[in-house]
Image 1 (tube, rainbow, N blue to C red):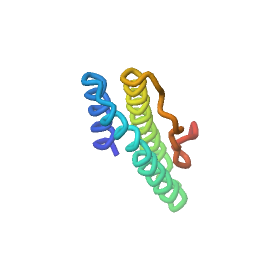
Image 2 (image 1 turned 180 degrees about the vertical axis):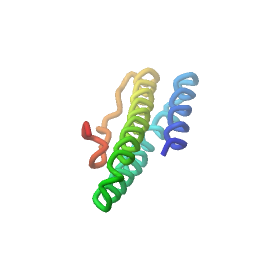
Image 3 (image 1 turned 90 degrees about the vertical axis):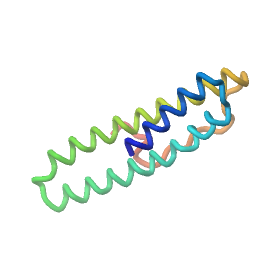
Image 4 (image 1 turned 30 degrees about the vertical axis):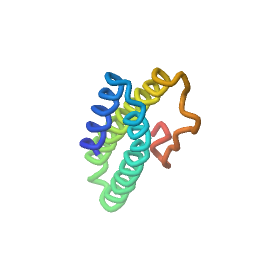
Length: 106
């Protein structure tokens, strides 16, 4: 997930520098993939915590790390949306879909 988000952020910044609407739109689409990865990790953490309560502390720390990485992806997507606005004068028409838990303030 971190590699995906790192690439997403790089592409968002490259799109900003070059005013590349196509690249910005791609960054925006990839946000849903990151949300799906985060949700899968969250479910896995829950499973480990329910199986053995000794896993709770480690899983919670990993969850907070995953959530912050997912938020970086959200910020990259916001940059991409601003690139689209900067280049076209219009914000993207369709709302960004949020996948399950990624859209909540867990």
